[in-house]
Image (cartoon, rainbow, N blue to C red; front, side):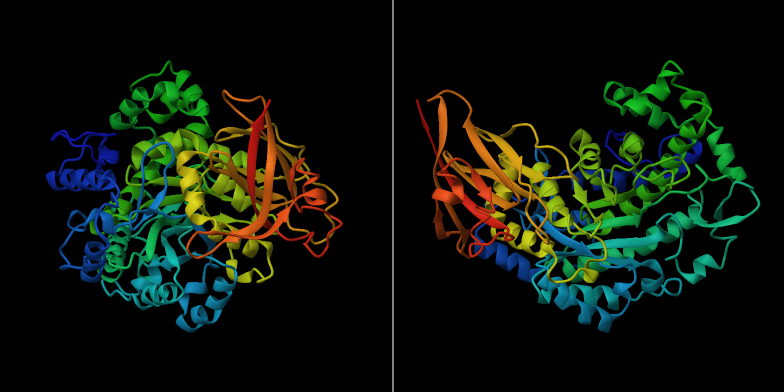
Length: 592
C-alpha cells in the first residue's frame, strides 16, 4: 500500500509513474484515500430491521450529481467481504454468480437484447455479463447516451437477475476497437503505441498518454455516476470489469521513444518499496528476476529485472495497471462497486497481450492498482484446474468471467464455486448455448442449494468435483468433519453429462452430494468411534422455504446396500435416470 504525506493509504497519480515520485496534488491524495477507505468499509451487518432496509431501498441513494461514493450508504453497495473466504455481498447477503457472458456486440441494440433474453432465463442464469462500450455511451465528446445501459438494467430487473458490466474503453482484447471515432481519428491528441519497427502506429492506445487516460477515466466516471443515480437503490449491477484483456502483442512493450525513455528511467520508488516489503511472498518468477540484481533498490527496469523480454513485460504490466488504476479510481469516486480486470492467459511471449494481469505479474498489478478487487482468468485452456489454482494465490477471489461453453462447462462451474469457493462462473457467448445444455441443470442445482452453498463456502465445509479429461480418481479430500473418498464413474454412456458436482457438510452427521458421474465414501475425522457408515440417502430438493422435500429413499441397488453414495444411483434403473444430475441428502453414523 502506498502512503501519501497525510499518512493515508492512496493510489499514486498517473504523473507519479512519469516522475517516480509521490502524487503532487492534495485533491488526488484525498480522493485516493477516500477510495481505499470505501473499499475497506465493513459489509452490512444484517442487524437492521426489515422495515428500515425497505425504506432505505425505496429512498435510494441518488442525490445530486456532485455526490461521491462516501455519501452512499455502505449496505446499499455490493461489496466483497474480507476474511478467509471472500464472498460477493449484495444487500449484505452472500451472492454467487451463476452467470453467462454475452457476445461482444449483443448489448448494442435494445430489440436484439430483448429477443435473446428468454434464452438467458432458460439457462437458469442469475447474473448476466454484458459489455458497455465507450463508443456507444460517448459517441461525441462530452455527449453521453445511456439508453443501452438502461435497457440492460430494465431487462435484468424484469427477470430477477443481476448484471456485471464490462467496460470496453481504451482496450478490448488488447486493441482499441471500442473507443469512439473522435478518439481514434485524432492520433496526435490520442496517440497510439508503436510497433516493433517504431514506424507503424498500432491500433492500441498508448498507456503513456495522459490524454488517453483522462478521456477514458472521464467516460467511465460518467458511467458509474449514472449507475449510482439509476441503480444504487436496486443493486442490479453487482460488479464492473475495467477494460478487457489488456496488453500489447506481439511486442512485449510499446516501442515508442517515450516508452523507451520510461523503460530506461529509474523504476518508480513506490513500486520498489512495496516489492521490498513483500519480497518473501512475491511470485517465484518475479522474485527470481529481481534476485539476479541482488534485490537492487535503484536502477532502470533492465538493470533491476534483467535485460530481456521478461523485464519488458513487467514494465508493460506497470504501465497498464497504473492507467487502469486511474480509470477505476475515477469510477469508484462516483460509485464504489467491486471492480476487476480479466486476463488473456499467458503462453509464449508474443502470443498473448503482454502487460495484462497474468499470474506472474500479479504483484505488480496489486501495487499499481489498489482500486481493483480481483484478477479474473478467461479460461479456454484444457488446464482449467491449474489456472484456477494460480488465480487464488494470496487470497485472490476466484471469478471466471469467460470460459468455453462446451459440455464440460457444467462440471467446471462446480469446481470454481465449490472447490475454490468462487464468486461465480460465466461461459462466453452464453446466448449461443442451447437451452438443453447441461449447464442449465448445474445452475438449477446450484440455485436450489444456494443458502446452504454460501454458508458452506464461508465455513469451508465444501469440496468440488470435476473430472478434467481422463484423469484418475482424486486423492481423499477433507470436507468439514469428514474425509471424502471420491471415485469417477466410467461407462456412463453417450450424451451423459460431464462428471462434476459438489459435496458439502450441512450438519453434524449430514451432507449434501450433488452433480453427476461420481461416487463417494466417507470417514469421520477426530475423536469418536472408528468407523463411519451411511445411514440414509434421499433424492430430493429444497422447496422455496428451504425445507427438504424427499422424492425417494435410496438403498439396496441404488447405494450398494449403503456402501457408497452414487450419482447415477444405479445404471440399471433407467426410470430413476441414468443421465440425470441429482441432489442427494446423506445421513452418516459412527460405530466401533
